[in-house]
Amino acid sequence: MKIPHSRPILVSFGLASTALVLCALLLLEWKDGTAAVESFGWVSHTLEIQRELATVEARMSEAESAERGYLLTSEANFLAPYTAATNEVRTRLVNLQKLVADNESELAQLRKLDVLAQAKLVELDSTVRLERAGKRDLAVAMVRNTHSGSLMKSIRSGLQSMTEVEASLLRSRQQSLVRELHRGDMISLGLAAALAVMLIALLVLARGAEHYRNLVTLCAWTRSVEYEGEWISFEEYLRRRFDISTTHGIAPDALAQIEVGLPLDERQKA
Image (cartoon, rainbow, N blue to C red):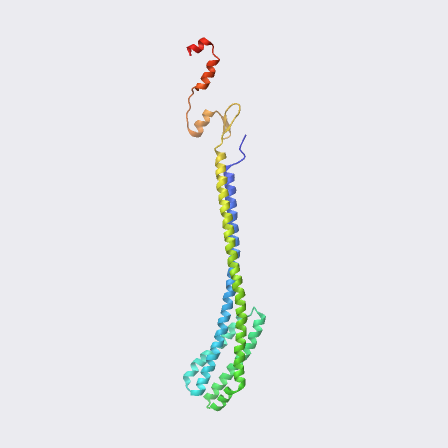
């Protein structure tokens, strides 16, 4: 009877299974890695918006301080920081519109803020032009106008409101990122364990196949051996398989049995 197991088949099955596990590991890691990268991207996006909002507020304050310094002293050295601050405010506001373009509510809020900021910048530019034209009294009166103070207050309030919204989004996105990373760790551990099990199974299969490979099929009647599809004598099998030559003798037990069947005189001769 032939053994229905084959070492190459078992090993191939084990290797194929291991390859499938590895492919699954790589696929899931790729998907989870993509999700984590996306979550990280949103976190970075939110942080960038927060930085832009903080920069707008800081530069608006710098522009206002430089404008007032110029009105008080008439010194031109205040104009360089004033110009730099106002230009940066305009640039940052344009960049913010691009950053929040995916969020309609924030975009609407930013547009309102932009209107206020542009109005404030126009006011600052007007006072600087009046001072340059020698009309300090008019410039100072414009600064003292209650509308000027309320305008800056509204700008700061709008910036703070957007910053709080972004802080909430940041917390949510950071939690999402942590969940993605944790899920990735769990998937990695689970699949690594599965891979270890598959490798152990492969080792067991290989040892089992080796066991079956070492079995020899003997004919129960003729005691001949099946070797490479041919039935041969045991002596021939030893020669082919192990390069062992054989000789013949008789075992003591066999000899005793033979002697029992011999006549008495023959046994005495033996």
